[in-house]
Structures are given as structure tokens and as C-alpha cells.
Image (cartoon, rainbow, N blue to C red; front, side, top):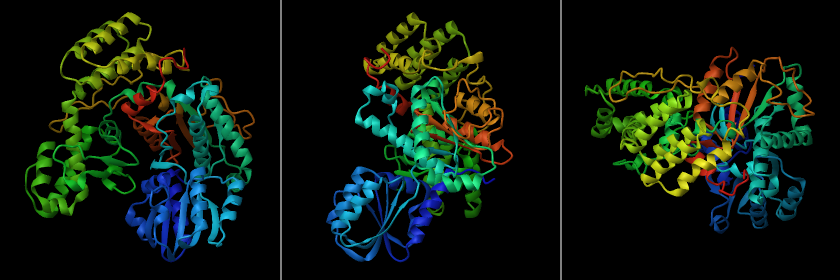
Length: 577
């Protein structure tokens, strides 16, 4: 059985689309599809397919451009109302010779009639549905780029039209994922989460409505064990998105922020112009692909080897011991920079990560975080926490993060929590941020969670087994803990996941006997997944004989800031009062 890859699935659709139309062409995209394509193809890849121009249908001057009748237009768009209106306007006065329309999801029949009425010049040659409707980050990780879904946890009668559209976009993304990965899954959801139940039922209805799309998949896969789509709720584990990260891809997102595999480095002190915006894509960067799961200690060692490899080629003998020396070397030898833009990119990024770790006291903060999350010792934790909050080694973001973790573990210790809030106030932290402590408990306190997040008092699998690095300047690194999601998925794949906690959708035609091992699975976190969970899934995938069998997805990929921004959307008079 071929290994699952969401990247390969999206690439195949896009490749088929640009190769199908010969000759000089212009690619017309929208804000979403620009991101979807850029995740899996570089600009130079696209140019190799005779694409001479890329236009964005959302840009202000799209309609005012000159006519180019010698070019054919390939439109790759999400099937949104806005896009249909813009296409209708374009077809009434076409700029290009032919139009080949590719939509990323199912197009309602009424929309096709509307386009046909506007196509007076008969410029439209074909309309296709190509289900490349997710942002493929790694082979086993995708996102829907929906940063805020927290309001979906409120009662449905209170949803705004915007929240309705977020819900529908989630269903469309999951439908497209099933088609891209060629699977007709049995759908399971989190029993304690009404939201995952609603999504599961709506998706099952959509799959039934689009039965014709799934017929060929059913024929291909006949006789094989049924794959599973498991829907999880972020509220069952609010701890993972709050933790500091110590593996490369997760650190990039936590400390620098990554959007569609791009990182804005423009605010980094002394940054060179060519590195102000960088791309970190495992599909386009071999070093990154090999190291995205490396812990920080190993990463620094590997970068040092990477630099030394290039030094040998240039016969340069400068001695390099620390991260600072690496950065100096890159700055002082411009010919090295020219020869290897990629090496110097990674050196600069790791130098910046190292600077942030030191400036924000992350090693100290992280040690206490790990202890809070993996062991039960209220008095000792409280004492250490107050001492760290009052000290000067950590930033206010770290102070807030630590209090949130304490409040999740010891949520019934109202006195201690209230005293900790006072300490936060004394450090100048605003009421909005202190309010997050109560909001977090309402959003994901023990009354919401389906299982004890802190079971066996070892949620972080005793992270005290610190990974010690031999590289100067980087001390203990904590990458020991396993996420809540990893345990659930491990049980799922072994056929041991309790049906009482994670039921099948009724009428799921292929509900496999629970005891069977699951051959392939998509695990989707409503409310956003994290790169730490992606790391655990990647480790699980390595353990299977058949290779990659699980793909992880989320409404977004959170770091601690984006997670807190989302939770803050729940106003104090929220749904849980």
C-alpha cells in the first residue's frame, strides 16, 4: 500500500491542471489558492510549465489590466460567492483567449448556470473540480488556515454568519482531504464534544450526497480494511499549545511564527535584505526536511556539520565552535553566502532562535513548564512558580504561560490562582491577559475535557530525562514528552480506542469492527493542532511496517500566541456561564 502523503496529493492535482493546457498561459488564483500552491511548488517549478504570469483575482487592479488574447487562462479558485461574482464579471469582457476553470471543491449547479449565462463569448473551455483544498505543510500534516474557531464551541443558535462559514469551510476541507487521499473513511468523533459530533454528521451527509465522487475510490479499495477519519477537539488538551518547543519546525513557529511555510525575519537585529522573508519548506529544502524533527541540541550539531561540509568545498579553515561563531563566519565570507544561500539561511535562523531563548529565559521557564505539566506537587510548584514570576530572568509572556499551566493542573485551588494573578498584576501584566486564566478554564477546564489530561501525573512522560547537548551554548533541551493526541492515535491504530469515548457516526456504512487494526487514518483537530503533535504523529508513522499511514490536520496550526488569541475571543460573558 502506497504511503499516505497530503503533499503528493495536492501536487498531483496542480500538476495535472497546468499540464492539461498547452501553450503560454496565465494562472489566475485567489488569496487561498496562492497559499495552497506555494506550499507544494516553488515559483520556478510553476514557470517550468509555461506559466508566464500569475494573477490574483482579489487584487484591486485585476479588471483594469490590458487584454492578452494570445494567452490562455487557467483559473484555480475556491468555489466562493465572491469568486463566482468576479468570474462572471471577467467573462462578460474576457481578457484572455480561453478560460479553463478549476475549483478546489464541489461547485453547486446553480453557480454553473450563472457562469454559463455570463460566458457570452464562449471563452470557457472546461470546468473541473480538483480537490486541492487544504494547505499541505508536511507529507503527514495539513491545515485549513482558519485561525479562530473558538466561537464554534458556543451553542449553535449563537453562531454568526461568519462562524457558519468557518464550519462549512471545515466540512469542505475534510471532504477534499478524503478525495485527495483517495479514502472513503469510517468517521469517528469525540464523544464529549458536541462540535466534533456536528462536524462528523455533516461530513457523513456530504459524503453521501457526493456518492458519485467516491464510487471509483470504493471500487479501487474494495476488499481493503476501512480507513478512519478521527475528529478530536482542541479543548481535550489545552496544555500542548501552551508549551515551549524544542524541535526545529515547532520552535520556528513558536518563536518566529510561520505562515504558509514563510517566516518574516525583517525585525531580526542586523538581518540582511535577502533574508527578510524566508521559506522553510520540507518539500523545497533538503536540510530542513532532514532536521525538522531534530531537537535543538542535535540541530546545532547538524548545522555545524553542514557549514563544515561547505567549508571543505571552499577550503576555508576558520574554526567554528559556537552558534555566534557560525553567524560571524557567514557574515564575513560573502562568497560562502553566495554559494550556499540555504546554509546561511539556517545559520541565521538558528542564531536568532538562540538569541530569543537566552533573552526570554526560555530554558528556565521550560524546565518549570515541563514539571507543571508532568508531575503533581502543588506546594513545590507554587513555591517555584512564585519565585520565578517575581524574578527577572523571564518575560511576561512566559509568566502568563506558567500561570495558565498551573491553573489548568490545579484548577480547584482558587486561592493559589488568585494570588498568582496578583503577582502577574504586580509585574504590569494587563487585565485582558490576566482574564485569559479564567477564559482558559471555561474553554478547556476539567468539566469540558473527556479524559483526565494529567493522568498518571506524567502527561509529559517525565520530561526530566533532559536531552543534553554537547554543543556549546545550548544546554538541556526538553523533547521528552508525548502529547495527549499521540496516545489516542496509538490506541486507534491498534484497534483499541474505546467506542464509548470516540463513537462512530451512525449510518457510517463501513464501521469496522473496533478490534481490527486501522490501516490508514486522518486525524483532525477542531480548534487547531500543533507542530508538537505533528512530531508525535511522524514518530508513530516511522514505527509502521508500511510506512506513513496517518495524516494529521487541523483547522489551523497553533503556537502559544495564536492559541491564546483564539481563546481570548471568548468574552467573559461567554457560552460557559
